[in-house]
Amino acid sequence: MAQRSTADGLMQSTAEAETLGRASEHKESHESNASDDVKIDAVEILGDWLSQMELTDEKYLRAAPAFRVVECGGRILKQKSRADFAHSTAVKQINKFISHSWQASARSKYMALLVFYNGKAAVVMGFLVAAATMIFFMFDFLPGFMSYAEGGPERKYLGPWCISLGTLMFLLILLFRRPRDLIFLDRLCINQYDEREKSLGVLSLGACLKHSKKIMILWDETFCHRLWCIFELAAFLKTHENTELLAQPLDLTDFLVWKFILNTLVYGGGLVVPYSTNLSDNMFPVLIFIFATCAQCWLVTRIFVCFSQGSEAIQKQLSGFTFAGAQCYCCCANHQTPDGKDIPCDRRVMQQCIQHWFGSVEEFEKVVQTRAKDAFKKHLGGHFCPFWWLAASEIPVLWQQMDVAASRLYERDAHGAIGRIVLGLSVQLLTGPTVFATIILLLRWKPCRGLPLKLLAMALCLCLVFGIHTLFRALFQSLGELSGSLIFAGSFLLPTIILWHVSAYKS
Image (cartoon, rainbow, N blue to C red; front, side, top):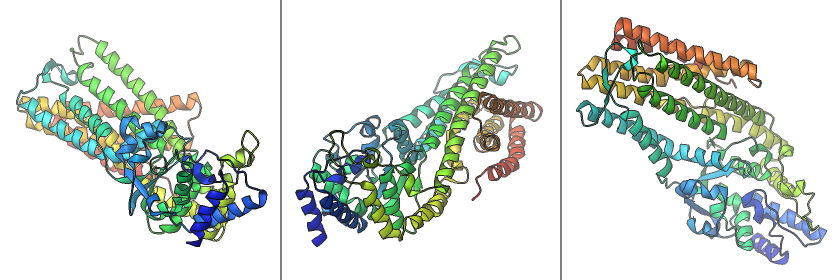
């Protein structure tokens, strides 16, 4: 209690040395009118208090439901409001502490949280709706149109309902599901409009981390360079030696979201545009298909390049992490406000905490370079992209093939329907990851930073896509849809396993 009295006294005696109040934004600053000697004492007292991870008051251990962060398009990540603090309540334990840099893109953080909390439910519900739609179409409850499916000589009764309604349900669940996981986000759980409350809330930051079950790191290239992000990581590593870190790289989320959008547009359009007329009489649909595929491969190559560079950046930042590389507002401003008043140094406070927890700054750096790096790889896999997340971004192709399967069931062709489902699963789980692993190997062998190398990656992507398309068409025509799809799946099983393991980052 003596230290708490000291902290409270400090807050009262140095009117604007509620200095750490800006920490909840990880960038803002407060003024200090104290003398040099008082400031030195203030730094020591605050560092000592934070290092002990104690609450200034139990009411400052707060959390809010996760949906408060993702509602209204992630408004809270873009701007703060006086009503935000009222959405959090005092708790005994926090499920997840959200650690992030306020310099990172608010849109990317919003999408990362949406995918983390709602992505799995969105995929499952989208699949269930697509499956129900397939049955409704089979019994003629949904309308269709006559199409030269797959360019064949016979018109087939077809409808794009599985991919349309599956995607619609996916988006509804992704955007509007309200996850209730109790999380800590600084803007929600620290009062931003009462300076004393704000300061006392920040002084309880270490205790909030100690009472958090897990930490979720919304990683971007600025994370390792923000001092308060490093403090949060250090405090969690100190108090949770056997707890894994939940890493959500923002580049990965952007990659998966764009890949899903492109797959939906290409495969959804493929049901209507390429095969709406007989290809032997009209080459226009073929040209549209080729153009769409080239555009898709170009865009896919670009997002692959961004993802590959982001993955490389994570590797380099974790392997070469140093405390000295972290930045804070006070040091960048030379410890003075624009009107010339002094600002206490956050770096000294953080350094005192880290030395207290780990013995030395160097030892903390080793912990980040080893344990944090291993935790990232354990959570995300050797590609920094979990296999099932990648497969989820490919689910539009399964929905498309479910539409074709519904057409076969409408004609009472059970073998053809099964063949189409097998083909959809093969593309989703085998050929999609094969293309991913192959392009990642190329980018890692010689990173694509110039236009010629991007064109090379695009050419490889085109060859793979057209090669895969030609293979399954040939198998279908010679062996039938069921046998052809089974042989197609079997031919890619071993190469996919090998390429997936070969292309993974090695420790």
